[in-house]
Amino acid sequence: MVDKRTLASFPGSFKKLFGYLMDETKDLKVLFHDFEDGAEGFELVAARFCYNKKSLDCISFWTWSELLVALKECQDLLSASDSSLILEKILDCVVTRLASLVVASPCTCSSENTRISWWFEDLLVLKIDLIDKVIRMSISRNIDHAMISKFLLCYQRSRFLTATPTEKCKIMEVMINLLSLLDRSSFSCKLLFGIFRVVSSLKISSHHKSILENLIGSQLDRATIDFLLVPSSRRKGYVYDVNLVLRLVKAFYIEGRCFVLASRLRKVASLVDSYLVEVAADCHLSPSKFAALVLVLPDDARESHDRLFQAIDIYLEVHGGLCEAKKMKICSALNYAKLSTDALKHLARNPKFPSRIAIQVFINQQSKLENLFEDKTHLVDTFSSSVFAEESIDEKVSSDQVLVYAKRINLPNKAEHLDVQLQAMQCTITELEKYCGIMQTQIGNIPRTRLSSLGNNARFLPKLCS
Image (cartoon, rainbow, N blue to C red; front, side, top):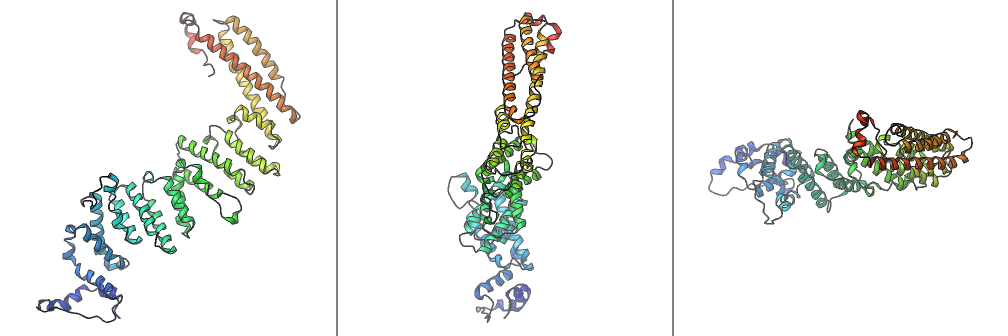
């Protein structure tokens, strides 16, 4: 039995064999016995024989339908090296038509999207290897990347209806490779997570999984909390796939290389904090995994640490038996300067947190109080010699009393005294802020003539608290 690929390699031999008989007036009939794949196999050989160099020179004049027929006929010869000339010429012509939109749309729909994407259905019959070639050539011709990504999704959905598990894996791997060549703005984060859900049930290679996760990580600032709540495998025990989120955050940094916009970083931090609150209640989540989550972002990623504190509070409530060392590891992610007053008060009274944390909170609050006092004292001294002499003297006396009280506060020897002293400090801060507000009101009522009497010293007036 003669192999069809072998026959397809010798079109010249066929021409010599049958050429002289073509002058005969009678019909020529050739019989092949036991020809591989029967009539279909012979058609493939005939295509190679008929599409000689002279015929391919006229390919630019073929209709769109004729190009599609030729492209389908070439599918089975993709692996044959001698078929490259025919295939490349047909592909070149097909992609040229798509790029220039020379071929009129066969549909009469007035929708702009439909007029642009009319060719989707025509190419759905092609195998994934040929689709790979078409799309790569389309990318090189600068065909709209957003349109390409839409076609790939359309192709995947259509082919999955009848594809085997092995074919599905092949389709998804090629699709992931092609998406990685497109501009990141040409597809949505929702599309990527949809692909991730599909491949989660398939056995695609770890290499392609890594490519997909890097693509998702590059758009992590566009994701929502629902996207991240991916169930973990049963053997891991915990509810959600924490390792996935850790990899996505790291991929976000890798994609941004050494520079990430602060606005994008803030969005990712907010997303991670929401995720932390969700997973903190999981009694099976190990301290090491939770610590990795709270420490995955740098300190400057968050403007406030209140939600981070909330997540840690929930986790320590559920995991009450943790040792001090593990608690300290988790709490090391907290920046007390970025906690609100209410969060600090709750933290100082919270017995779930290590005692050393409460002491650090106390020191932080005392530092805040001293800084605030210095600001208010400077403000009072500036105005004491000018417009508000009498009022400023009274306020300075009150401030001096506050300073005396504040400086009498010593670091307690017992943790139970922290709450009382923090409340006293909060009252002092509130009182100073009240004085600041009064002075702002009074300064706003000063006539311009009185301010001008301060001369050049006016430019050195400190900015009041907001």
